[in-house]
Length: 144
Length: 140
Image (tube, rainbow over all chains, first blue to last red):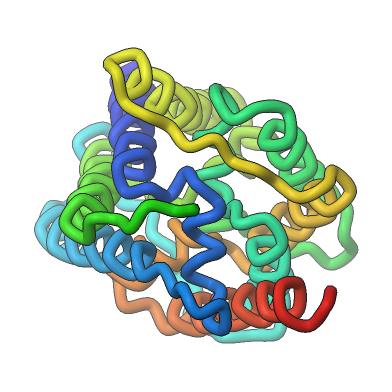
């Protein structure tokens, strides 16, 4: 139960961060990705800098502990290898991201207010995750 | 069309995302990658599903609560539905195949200096920039 509460609060904070930083507007994300448009929007760079900076400090402090508050050990991805799956998957994700301007976080955070199209995007995304489960030779790892 | 954004607010919003990621590692021992959390919420067994569902519920409620207290939310205009569906499918397959999205690789992975995440972020940003260029400037 405690694990569920802390995860819920983390999700709330995460969503508030996305909201305040303007990342719930796909037009702003596309404005960052559109290098040739003449009106480049640097917002995403600042958001990423704030998020990576804070996480780097936070992770550094937290991993000094022997484990999490609720649980035995930290569950951090241990894979080091850069392979075709990683690059191919990232490229597919990038094309989808560039088509609409939604990545998973902002898309899911938009379900409650942004209308039918945003919800349909999320359903298609879940559909894609289910399709991935049907692919042959799937390695038993999930996304970070 | 888009109001110029305050870089300080963007930095603070980003820091809040980093704080949420730190919290999830501190209390739950988990990486805050939204794609992975969503994927696990669909398929993971009982107790492993619960914390993921709670995270996603918090994520969905955050903007709604923000608006309840008088905040202004964007009114996104998305492309026609077939394009939305194709994009959603690509994001779903791509993030599970590539083990992460903008939060998993982009925030948590870069913060951990993971070489895989640097490679993934470089790839998905390049692919997204190329896609936007083709759609907006190559008559696509």
